[in-house]
Length: 458
Image (cartoon, rainbow, N blue to C red; front, side):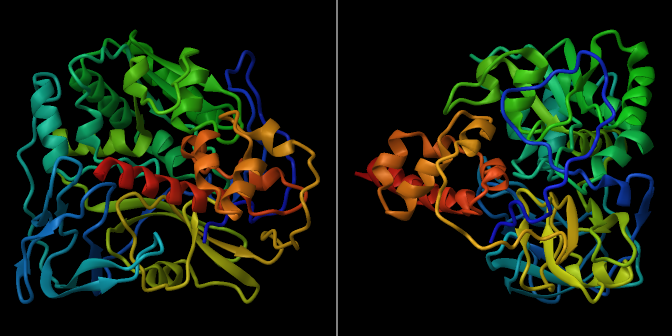
C-alpha cells in the first residue's frame, strides 16, 4: 500500500527568499530534513549476496544474458535492454550468479531477479571515458543507454528516451529538478553540496544531447546552502540559471516545476516535450556525468535512511540489489517503537512487508517511522469541505474521483480526468475525514487504463 500522509501534520517555518516561484495548490508538510541534511554520504560495503530485479525501470523488463554459475565482474552487463522503453542492467559486484528467481521488490510486486554471490575480487568492466567538450549528442544518448541510466526522480523512466525528443518537438530549456520536496529525503541536497561541479557537467551534457542553449536548476528555498553553492558554480556558465522556488509539496513534480520555472502549463495527456522542456533529476545528471566522463554504468543507489524509528540516520551510497534488512542493520537497526518502513518519501513511497526486497536504481530513501509519525486515524464520512480540491495541483476533484472508483463507475471517472492524477497524495494529506483518497483514485486509474487498453485491441 502507499503510505500517503503517514506523518503528523505539523507546520514549520521555512527559510525563504524574495520573489520565489511556485504553482497553484499544494501543501506544506513538516519537512523533517534536519535528521540527515548535515550528514555526508557514506559508502556501504558490498553485501555477501545481492538480488537484482530485471524490472529496474519503467517499460519492459531487461532480458538476462547470464545463467546459474556465470562469473561476473563489476560493471558487466547481466541483462540487456529489451525494447525501446527498457534499460540494460550491470552487475554492481564481482561474483557468481546463484540463480534467477521471482523475488520480492520494493515496489510491492514480485519480479524476476538475478541473485549474485559477491566475491573478494574487484575486477571492473567499464566503458571508455568520453571528452565532455567534444562528445556528440548521439554519443551522449548512446552512452546513457548503454550505461543503463534511469530517472532518479521516482518513475525510473529510461533516461536515453527522455534525451531523444521527437524531431518535431523543439526543446527550449533543460531543467534539473533539485526540489526534493518529499519530507525526510536529503539525497539530492547532499548531491548538490558534495558533487556540485559534476551535476553541472551532467546538465551541460543533457543540454548538448537535446540541442538547447538554456539550462536551469530548480531548488526549493529551504535549501539556502545548496542554492548559494550552485549560484557560485554557475557564474562561469551564463546560459545556466538557478531558480529559487517556494518550498511546497509537490513542487518537484514535472508539471509543477515547469509551471514554476517557465510559466508554461503541460496540457493533460501531454509531456514536457510538448512545451519545449526536458526535465531530469539531480541524481540523473550526476549519473550521466559519470557515464560519459568516467565510463561508469549505473551500479549504485544514493539514498537517505531516516525517520525517528531508525537508530542512526544516514545518507548512503549502496550497491543496487542490497537487501533492505542489511541497510537497516548498517544504520544501527530499528527502534522498538518503529511502526512502518517505507521506501521512497512519505507522500508517494511504498510501505514494505518483506525486508529481503532489494534496493533498485531509483530508490531514493528508506524511512523508518514511529507510531507518532504515522497518521493512522479512523476514516469518517466525507465532510464536503473541498480541501482536497483546493490542494490538488492539477485542479481535479479528488473526492468525486475516489467516490466513483469505490462505486466502480470507471467510465465516469475517466470523463472527469482520473488518468491525469499523478498520485501525489496532497488530497489524502488534507482530508479531515481521513479518507484514503489517493488509494481509491489509484485503483480507479488502473481500471480505467485497463479499459483503454482493451479498446485499443478491439
